[in-house]
Image 1: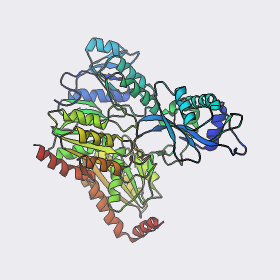
Image 2: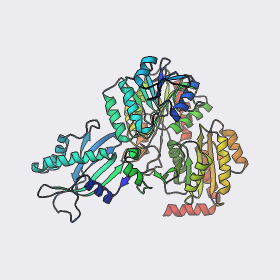
Image 3: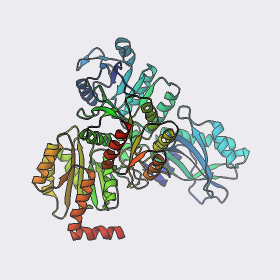
Image 4: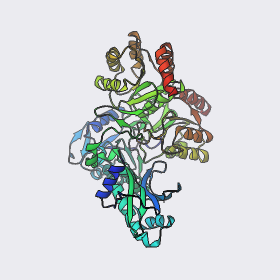
Amino acid sequence: MAILVNDETRFLIQGITGREGSHFTQQMISYGTAIVAGVTPEKGGGWLHGVPIFDNVRTAVAATGADTSLVFVNPAAAADAIYEAIDEKMRLIVCVTSGIPIRDALRLRAYLASRPATRLIGPSSPGLLVPGRANAGITPLFLGTPGKVGIVSRSASLAYEVMAMMNEVDIGQSTFVGIGGDAVIGTSLADILMLFEDDTETHVVLLIGEIGGSGEQDAAEVMRDVITKPIVAYIAGESARPGVRMGHAGALVTSPGTEAGAKIDALMFAGARIARSLDAIIPLLLEAHGRAS
Amino acid sequence: MRLNDSKAMALFAAHGIQVGADSIPSNSAYTLGFIFDDTRGAIIAHAGLLANEGNIRETIDPLIGMHAYQARALASALDLPSTVWARFSAFCLHLYALYTQLDAVILTVTLLAITEENGIIAYGGSIEIDDDALWRQPSFAAAHTPSSHASDLTIVPGGLPFSPFDGTVALICNGAGMMMASADCLSTHQLKPVTAIEIDGEPSLTRLRAAFNQAQPGADAILVSLFCERFSAHSVVDHLIVLAAELPSDTILFTRLAGIDAPPARARLIAVGIPCVSTLSAAAIGLRELVKRIPEVEDKSKEREKD
């Protein structure tokens, strides 16, 4: 089985009537994703794309049995939407919204720490893709074929690019998880590595990291201690200047250890095969994939 | 958004913090502040003697805020006399309230003096406000102008976000990761970006023209690197052909298009004389070859490297 979602997962969309929420709900439904409910306060009772709309998560869960929330709510209201989903004991919350203030994200993460039954992916996540089974987020529909490589990435655009390259050489994916490019996120690279380790469908893992924070070093530590599956890693931002933010809120070299070189070293010493460019990923994946098969 | 010394001091004063304007007392001087530590994903209170690089740190629970005992721990570690602990503690809590109220990621009193009468006076400070929180800080949002602070992803009014470099090639990409990967690839092939411009969303003619305008006049060459996901590569080609005709004759345009309908789109660009490839490495190598063939650009690049 893939990680995080399975054939029984029932999704609800918070912010379903917004521009993005509506557009991507339609896209996800066309992929076959089980969207069972939408939530927009004060718009309960309506329908959109064949999905019933509820005023709040509680009534949506009671009526439909939804257990996973995808958050498309605007940044000013997104934290509130996530608290609502946590309090209604959603198993998984994927926050696609980007631009949530750091203070809000820190408080959310602290709140979640005492509620281990709920996992948050994101904020600023492109979501999850289990090729052929579920597209829970904003990943373009033409990407992804079923296969044995698990992908975890801080960058959506690089994951898309790599998935397109993988499709050209017939390497498929078990699950793609975009954890988000913000400085404070709910689920780390290391967390996803652990899930892939336990997933029988995943034989090889591709980790796409970038400058900023210490998530890659934490992943390296988990690799050394727990992970037995082959890992290919690529870190973006080697040319970044210290102190210059590179697009993502979390992509910023602030202190020693947050630069690409330190992350590459940590992952390499932990046993990852390092791709020094985007184009070098495929040969390494082919090699690891061949060995794992 | 960064507030410089005078603006920070004005804010301190407006929030009841005693601010010194005259000469700095010669007795003990300290630094004190709060910072979001991205490596630990936590808010850290820090304090230190100005003359000493070592800082004392306390991690703050974002749900509860700073405890008085943590402030007293800082005072004790700074060797402040116990007679000043209560006042110092109140000062710290006041400062932390300001930190959260302003949605700051950094708030530092860069020079803090404690007078012989146990007064606590700030003589310098800086504040950096979370750009993502400006929607609830309307007084700052209105005054938000392009910043010279390096840690800002600079935004030109009405323009596109970009990250500054010091080379000669302007990068136009969709997605932050792609921007970084493209800059890395150029560097690997002895080319340096001068700027990396991020087009978020559909690269319409208007957005692409804005990006081209922002790229000049600092760039000798422009590399457009796009992964066509939710938009047609053919529409991008239409726009690029229009914009190529508007470019100065001495500016090189190189393109890289990937995505589902990219192959025929690439062929269309090549047919009208605009180089277009599918991979980043091919783009960097191709662009490098073009730059080499134009001695003026090569010379300018070398001069900049010397500088």
